[in-house]
Image (cartoon, rainbow, N blue to C red; front, side):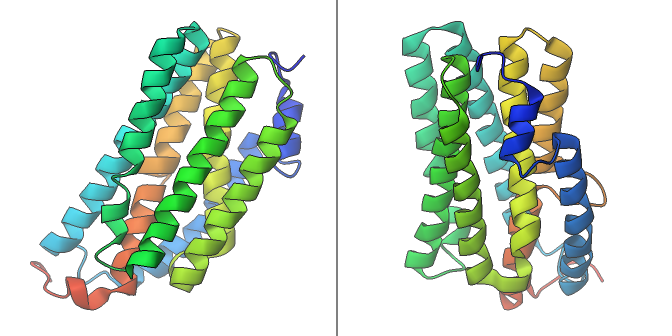
Length: 237
């Protein structure tokens, strides 16, 4: 039953929204946030330090998506050794998230963001495992949803309007939903949905859905807006 999980079960996890509706809600709310953030630091977006931070964020999440994809492929293949190695790569890579926040927050707050993001990844992996192993996925989905809320709360409390809570919940919901769809489509050997889900996950994490921003840019622009004096020497304008 759960190996061929219906889309209705996935919809139920995400507050009865279809993935398309969740993505639309995410887009509608993130568009407003993008306009606020872009206006807040438009004079410094080409500062070398700002560009470096934005590229560092994009690089991190690009590799993060690759490692998650690799885990899904190996998990479905049934190769326990390759799957364990893929999980180790995810864990090792997550340690690289901390340097993104360390220069701009006190150590305890930077660690809190990195830890809760790691917890989110582990909850997502648990959902993937439940799908592949044909287990009841409801509990893993509930824990994933709770962790999305926890991470969004932490980020909002640290940066308030730079990372507004509900748009962050929507963005993380859309991303994790795309990864769940990706897993299920590979189990069912539906390669067109698999490819489309990967594209959506990449958009939510990295490239965005213009005019909406991907998570990598949301995080970087939030930091720049929160600490503008660290990026106040533009090379243009």
